[in-house]
Length: 179
Ligand SMILES: C=Cc1ccc(O)cc1
Image (cartoon, rainbow, N blue to C red):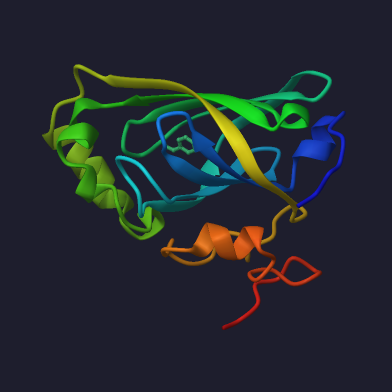
């Protein structure tokens, strides 16, 4: 786990995080570059979902505090405020009604099913939205470097976040250790 002090936007880009929201939902998220994020969901309503190359708006609000926001093919909107020096963040997820009604449709490697997401968002209800505002505590931070395709490169499995935290998942160059 990196113990670096975050000061600039560049300190944040390329960082890989694991965190648990106060509602118990565990997420893994990677600031791939200044306009792209990858993530995996390990716990909560849509555990098992994973996404690469989601376009996002990423800015530094003030020294060491970062805001990230994006809208997804499902119609879900996300806004995250990271305070990595305090190992915490605040996230708000705005789910369309249909994701709450049919979470299983979204639990997949989304990149291979974009058409299914577009179809579902037209077919099912958008409203009322489910708003989930939560603080989270960061349980892992890694310096993966920008545009590292090995950070998020397979489906989530039971124990994956423990493997990462224990140093069993990435080698010293932040490449996935093949099992
Ligand atoms: C819906 C995606 C999503 C990704 C990361 C996060 O912290 C919250 C939501």
